[in-house]
Amino acid sequence: MRHTILNLEESKIREVANAGIGRSDVLAFWFGESDEVTPDFIRQAAIDSLNRGETFYAHNLGLPELRQAIALEMSRKHPAHGGGHAAQPIGMDRIAVTAGGVNALMLAVQALVDAGDEVVAVTPVWPNLTAQAQIMGGTLRTVALVPKDGAWTLDLQALLDAITPRTKLLIVNAPNNPTGWTLTSEEQAAILAHCRSTGTWILADEVYENLYFEASPTGCAPSLLDRASPEDRLVVVHSFSKSYLMTGWRLGWVVMPPSMTAAMGKLIEFNTSCASVFVQRAGLVALERASEVTPRVVAHLKACRDALLPALRDVPGISVATPRGGMYAFFQLPAVDGAPQDALVVAKQLVVEAGLGLAPGNAFAPEAQGWLRWCFASKDMARLHQGVARLRTWMERNGGR
Ligand code: PLP
Image (cartoon, rainbow, N blue to C red; front, side, top):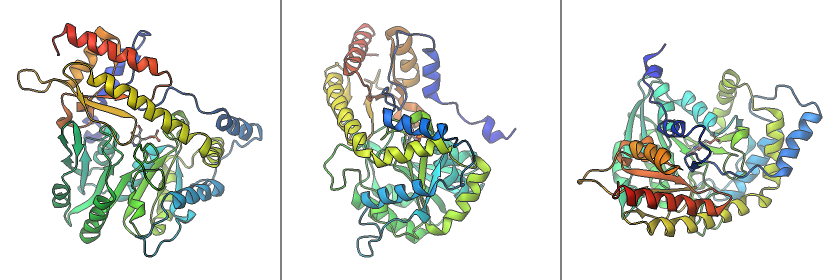
């Protein structure tokens, strides 16, 4: 067995969830998914596909009609593609359908990272992104966001300084899981220009682009696609999971330079061969009828955010900034004797002693020690209030720790 694999850290989110397994009294907000079932018409598309007997392998890169629909959706969302001057639609020759966003990320890293390559990642971040680069033998350097008044912010110069001609790949996830931090369009332009000068690839995880609560002309977060030309060294990863309530379906996609697509097809063959056809059919209907799902999902998430945050802020000792995107409140526990609390220990205690399931900040980066992540994608908003009441009682009982 490779030492790299043996030494991979287990997910601390799972560690907390395992402490609550079998307990029906735990209010769980630890995973990044809504508790709402996929809409009927999307499920029906999969059922119809199976009933038609679509039970065979498909093209490595995905069903042409789905790739085309994704290309149209990407072009609609990112009309300034090509930097504004040479705006051109994103063609289906740049799209590959994958078995989920996480599979798309892994494929990109397999395609780009050789053993010993330097990879820079912006943290805190969902741990899968950094683990994948390590699995491929990459040497990971992290640039930490900095909390200011509870909100995590980017020191752009520190990031640019960390990316040198030795850097093969930059990994950045915005809107960010867990912090809700989002890149501005200006920051994206600066990062892209710098990476062009160093010859560094960018892997942009934009799976939360639709879950954006600020006003924007296209209804989504700023994207590196708004700035890049087709042949820039940029791979953008997307997912059906969050915007269409399809976490369990395992469907995502990548947008890449056209010159990379054939190699990506080969890699897909050796990983999953293709995404399941009936799942792709469901994805196609989800895109075609996106206006019936995503705006409702985003409006509900915003309402959840706006219910949870004031309630959390009302708990003595808790401070929390308003996330601009994503589905998480990320908040800091009060320090004890001047030191941050061990978030993993607290998260486990909360499960056992308070019946409340949150994800520990140190699952996402060491600098997020003392922070907890709360996924607020809850169909029933009363659950959020019950959760806050449990947190308050537990903190009062434990004197703020
Ligand atoms: N990227 C980020 C930042 C995520 O938080 C997630 C899921 O939580 C994913 C990618 C992958 O999503 P999926 O594999 O369900 O498409």
